[in-house]
Length: 142
Image (cartoon, rainbow, N blue to C red; front, side):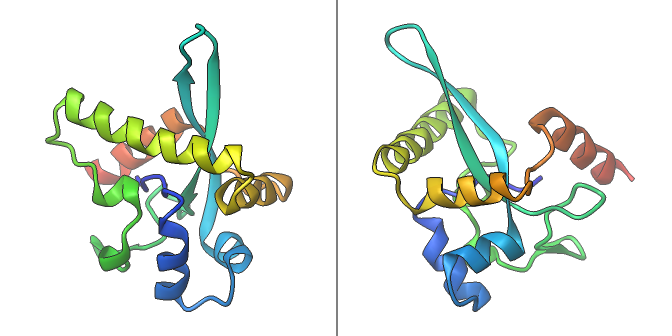
């Protein structure tokens, strides 16, 4: 299952894939997901939409070919900084760092949030996280 991009992933992925601009990167290779729900100190919650690599019909990442990542050297934050063997405390620490960066980008109306809005407006949305997880598990077990 593809991991979420961090704001700093955008330019390196654009360059690695040889696309002329971030809008093209998003339209050709990304989807916007429901993102992370973050609890705020005042008790309210905020949803930070995330950008994820587009998926194939079987739910696998579009960059996965023959079991190997074709963009491994430029893998997004959610792929390069998480693994199945990580304990919850470390996973939470890394997730928090990503949420801070997403909130910073959203606060400044940065390129990440602008691309999320572009993709959302064009209906290029990832399936809900639970559905993507189920599809990835089915693909892995077949």
